[in-house]
Length: 501
Image (cartoon, rainbow, N blue to C red; front, top):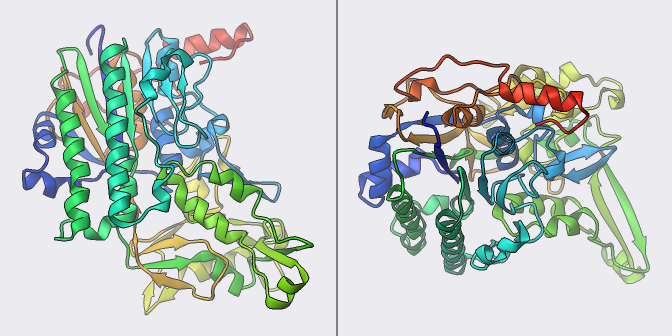
């Protein structure tokens, strides 16, 4: 690792080799082909759940959700749902750690990193959970004049949506290029959300002859062009890392956990009435509406609007009476707050006669649809998480190769048609001085990114990171140490009463 190293990270949400490799093979992405041939690369394991919020937070902190506290886009607190934000992360990001070691960082749109903490040194552009496109410090506002959000994309369909996605990606790349070239930095971390949104809307069109794929393919060609632009600017002290948070694929079907739990008597719903005016959609739904500008939050938004939707019969309408139905989190013995949770919360105190945790889990383990088991594994939270936030995780999580999850409480169907959604297969590519090109012997984990980035600057990772340095990607292996200088700085900060790194 060179003195004065510079590290560039392109974080491309949902990018996966299942889509990337065929495009490389047909010659549509020559710069990715060049990078793959000159980089250490591998499929990288996502986390459970393989969802943007917790996944990028694990990348940014090098820790599992039990330590950083983000398991979903939301959390249930005292019987109500709260949308997670940057302030809910109970850990430093590697960008903040680098800042504390004197490095200047630029982060653009990286999930759950805005506003940056007080020790952050550099420039930060807001992420999808921030209500406005913003930049810190404010005097750098000129850089985000072309930076576009996906605020309107959720209201568009078909070719209009594709035109918008192409426009958004172009604007974000233009802003990134300006920051890259005009500002001084040691770390440049640029996040791109558009590919994920394309997959959610058009995954089934990929590789076909439809007009949607002909136009959508332009997103990947533009992405490849941007990569070529970056490659031209690498020097003998620059490292380039390309990562994603999860992959994407088609599932055979959908399993609606809340409908199943309700039919078994475990999930309860509550009804609230309003008279003299229509039932209001204010509150959580309206709050979430502030954050639709990036597509990763849109499935959550749709879910909560359905969760709290108004149901008014003819007589009630005539009388000006409306009512809302929702999950009663306090009275339910078991529920799943969102499909992104990929698990259930269990409240043993609300079990009724004849109900038990063991019986519930046995029924879920043996649940079948059309003669096949639905879940490949049902795992306890203690088996995959550790840390001070363990008790905030779903009690049990579900792994299924065939079915994706739903959490709606309306309708009668326990199962629905399949659709495209996230999977565990993220990507990892690393190029630079002392990097050994070729396929890595095993799969890295998301939590390995942070300690590996620190090591590229010659910094030992702190002892509380779960990830490891990917020594197998390097030509020379440095003995890994924990209890690093970062730990010593933290210890001194605590001694003198300041906020530790």
